[in-house]
Image (tube, rainbow, N blue to C red; front, side):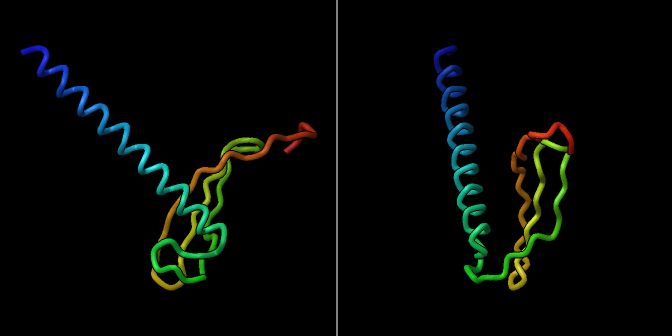
Length: 88
């Protein structure tokens, strides 16, 4: 009986890991398309940066992009660069 429970948990764990890998791969492809100015949903040019937030000088940035044609909205957290001067 314990073998079946362990096997079930292993299947569930593997499914969660594979789902997360697929999600991150899709997110990366969407960001690459947005950096080229193309909407990942409607494949037209018209992506616009609508919001940009930062936690400080070298912290991650939260960027929100929106398509002007199909109302596609997505937010990405991007690592910021380091401060070489020591000031923000």
